[in-house]
Image (cartoon, rainbow over all chains, first blue to last red; front, side, top):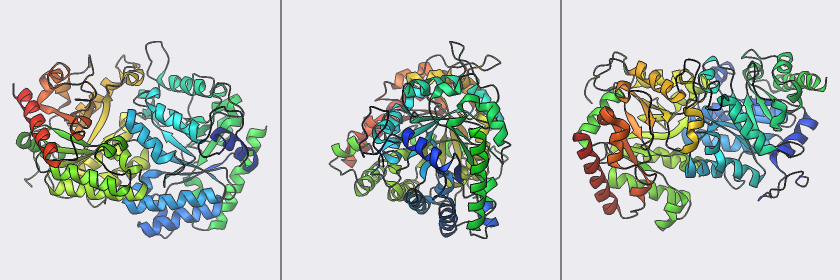
Length: 291
Length: 291
């Protein structure tokens, strides 16, 4: 890896900050994030049993098809947890294999808690010596943005990242995310402000990201000011389109990481088909972002 | 087990609804919930290595000391996840051992997501055939109460429970939980209203619970109307006292499940000391609730 860039916090493992590593990956591989979501229905459509063996085959097929070419792969922890400790062992192998092929691994687990429990999640997922080490982790801030502090601090120390939920595309999300705090700021905007403060002045890109749905309307915060990666799930199956991203993200488009899952995965189990589709989606999003 | 009581939803595994099972456990064993939180610092104070072997020893010591006498044991998933798949295997053994000794197992994992991902968490933790089956699971509603629907429906179908975060004791929790929705209802009160609707008319106790911190002030919802279990973390180490519970919970006290963790666990590794302390705390809380 190159030397750390533009961030004064030292990295325990000697790797560059996550934001710099992600920026380099986006610039060289294009913006696509491929979800690894082993739904039972998808596994059945691939002819795989809903078993640990099927799970392993599914995950490794995706890794083999795309991890040498896309910037980010995003395993969804829930689908591995379904299979207990044996499923988690598959997750460990999946993440290691994806990293070995050059992709950054974003584990989608939406963890959150307080105090020493958040510190335990940080050591589970953002400490390079952990068997479940991921380059970045999604986090859920129902207990407040600052409750995630041990995750944020560990990420900065180890060259890892955190993507905090801000605005999601599901309709019921608004009941929490659009509620107004005492100063009149919406909850989601408050989360974005916290992330922006974390990333202020960092170049080329902050290491703390936000999750902002690809079909969210009227985001009441300047997303470019977040100065961090913006994970945009919901492209494809959930109705988001490459063109739609422009209206949501505007000037922040260069920092957007569009995540596709089912729309790609349904093309399996043929690895070549997955690879061709990933290349096509990468080109589509890349062209949009370069406009 | 006795037959299902007061709830029309059938149980796939033939066990009574979680609310009925919990009510019976609280009435016969007293209200205490003992956390199994294998903090690295606690493990060190017990003379245990921060390893899978140490984790197993810690968790099994707690189970052996208290699971034959307290109503609920609550493993904190984060501390098992720190040890990867081998740690999750310890969690599986811990939960099975606690159930075999008659305690209900509440897994504290604060899961949350949308759609098929929530359904995957439901099958991971609330489907009796899963290796990680827990009698109940904590859930985090940043994506909206209704985003948890697959967890709620699975719980009712399998005789299991869900405890949804509402109001937590940490100061930064208010930034989300006290924010006001468009109808002027605070986020936390909206969560409590959702749970109350779920549990309406169920006897002896609904199966959907709420997490309400033991030191939360000014809860703007009638907690007795929730008609479900109220998990109250923060007793002891976080400043909550048995007497303080009365001012927070009032008429809902009979449905309160006070959770103790560090204040009990620091007395280990002597199993007899843990047992004596659990009996003492059970008596203290039981006397309060009987007043």
